[in-house]
Amino acid sequence: MNASVLLRLAPICVLAGLLVGCGVAESDPSRFESAAERIAAIPLSAEDAGEAPVAAPDRPRERAAPLKVELMTPHELWDAREGLSARVRLASAPASAPTAYPEPEAPPQTVTASKPAGVAAHHVQLGAYSSEDGARAAWRRLNGGPGGAVLSGLQPVYEAVEVGGRRLVRLKVAASAGQAQALCRDLAASDPWCARSGAAAA
Image (tube, rainbow, N blue to C red; front, side, top):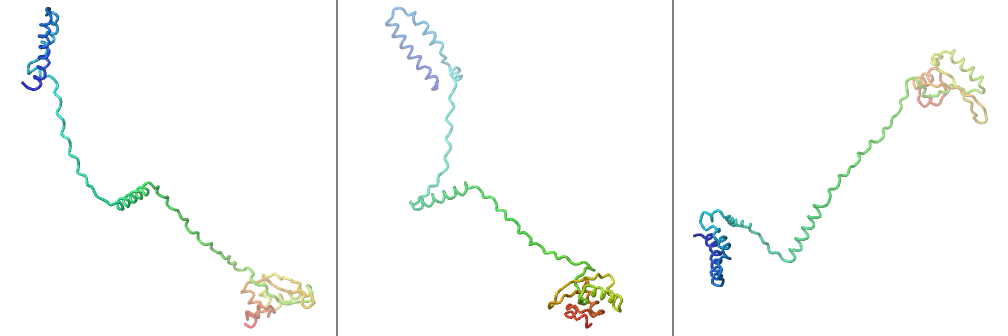
């Protein structure tokens, strides 16, 4: 017999003892027929016992991994705790957005407007006269003279000034640098620019 059969026989023996005791005390054994039938219905064979559910054996416990224990002094423990706190703060801090530096602006370029060819650059004084009529007469005379060709296309300018208490009218023409040099050379103009540039002597 195995252990399961013995466990089933134990309550039967207990019930049988109770029935025997009850039969001695009671004269009418018919009261216990139903109890006897229930006892007889209990399976006793090994086949019946094999049908009973058998508890699954306990699974062997997995061995725990060995733990490494490090002994630390109170100072080392304090330093380790501070280092862990610093790492936690560093990991939880949000990454700062990259700072965008604006590209330096290019310095403003100075554009020098070049004067087109033929634009007057100088006012060359051809003479000074006591009146505007005298200045106009001088203009006609210069145009008809030997060097009048250099005045072709130029317009006279009559400028009234007062010098030393005297009222004078200056006869000028607006000319480019090349034309001014020709005026100084061919007409022996009295303009100070001619003296500075040396064009009159040339």
